[in-house]
Image 1: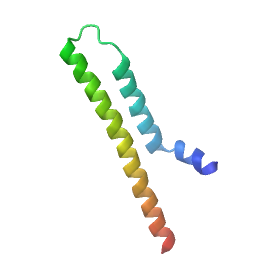
Image 2 (image 1 turned 180 degrees about the horizontal axis):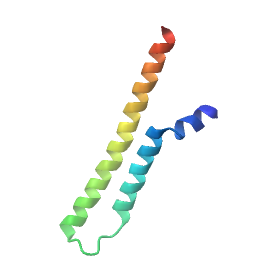
Image 3 (image 1 turned 90 degrees about the horizontal axis):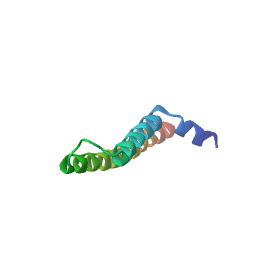
Image 4 (image 1 turned 180 degrees about the vertical axis):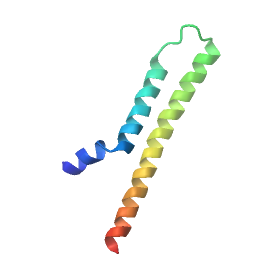
Length: 74
């Protein structure tokens, strides 16, 4: 349980979580003065940011785990 709490309180996770929350807000917040094309662009960008943030966090955590495993075997 302690490892889980350490992992979710890391700066990497909190940054990825903040980006995900901002993307969800951008995805579901209606743009009153934006045209149809601008609203679609915002939704596409929000979805792309959500996917890239999740993928980026996974890559960073994998590289950290790989570095720790390499250091433990030495």
